[in-house]
Length: 138
Image (tube, rainbow, N blue to C red; front, side):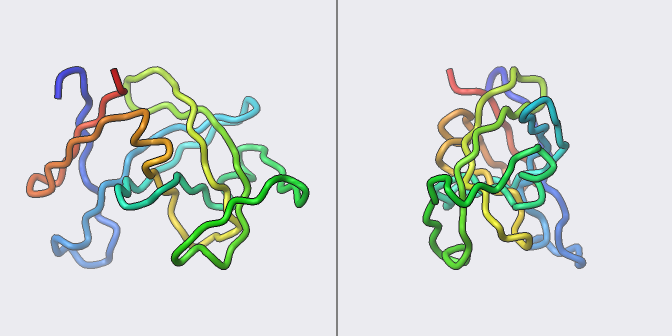
């Protein structure tokens, strides 16, 4: 991919077998003049981006019970979620706005899904090489 940046898969399991490596993308999230270094799991099967509760708090977000709720599915269906839009800096690229379902679940990773990470970035996976390329959409 031209004009892309390459990232390595991260070892996330205690064992060093091939299944322990996943595509985690380092990024900086910014909201209300507060920034957090984070690592997002690239999940092409996730419909939405998902932000864990503690990261939202670190970004200065306030859980408003009156805010519109987002209904999550699968393993996250039992948790409440609220919409939040933050700026994300990925590698050498300009900052872009990402929309998240901010969930009260603390046990999940930061998930980068179809809406709207994969709408803003093209990603090419090279699983056999434990690498992936990322570039902003044209």
